[in-house]
Length: 414
Image 1: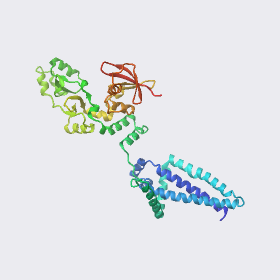
Image 2: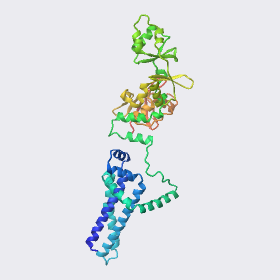
Image 3: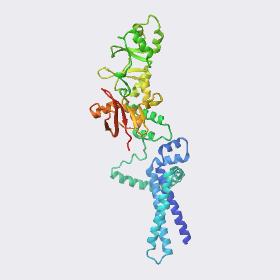
Image 4: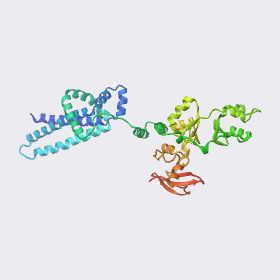
């Protein structure tokens, strides 16, 4: 065979080796979720690539079979060329092998695989057409190779039945959403993360605590009650006698404002306008309570513990806030970034809300609020100026009162 033909065959083998190496990397690094999206759009190359990747062991067996054959053939050709050119030198074959290794490493391995990693679709979709045909031709050999490989894997107690399965768990999906800043606004990211956290949240996590409940005490004078109704920022108020554990109903202010200017307006009129209170166990999941609100056509309920004592109040707006966050409330007021990179945080903020705003992972099992988390960690109410490391975050106590921490400063970690 002429030397020119041998050089031409060697060049062809190098090109084929680069093709098989790049194709292997491009198919294995394809974004599976983008691939499924393209399949739904009827992209022909994506359809064939997706079909091949249903059994990645087969396509890998085919590519490696072809690539090894091409590389070995190239090595043989290089040996023949070395003998033709330098028949008298004993080291000619070794030199040819070394040069071929360097050339194949650069032009048939590193370069095509790097390109395939950066732009996998550029090579994966066209090569899928070629491999579909080659798989039909070499199927018996590929089947034999895969069968022997699977037998070896079973000996090593590796389960091969799950090959080709690609599923996401909830934590992985949350990571994907957290890293999708370039394709969606930050507030939408937090909304989606809030939806994913619904199954782990209970009404106790998002309720208004008992001491913050605003209601009408029927033991007050009618003048005080009227003043409270006129100045209330809420549309629905619980009505009780002496304390919220003795609630008798909820008052919709839109109904009572019509009657409030009548001369015969009294406490009995208020009682006649009340709706029956709804009591919600504190362990009720948020998504379950949303369905209850929807089915029963109510918007507010009282959260009770196992003894029936009122622990807080939850509204439909609270449940929606767990999903849409700052779109309906300005939660950023509770977390304020400073020029030096630190954060001023109201200690009354819930741990779940703080995690959502800051993308942290503070524990939610110990306490529901940042104040509770600090008190549980310190086992006392820390003085102003105290600095602590709370679950990996350094903070300083800025304000406190007799019963709780009010304001903290999370320092910037260098």
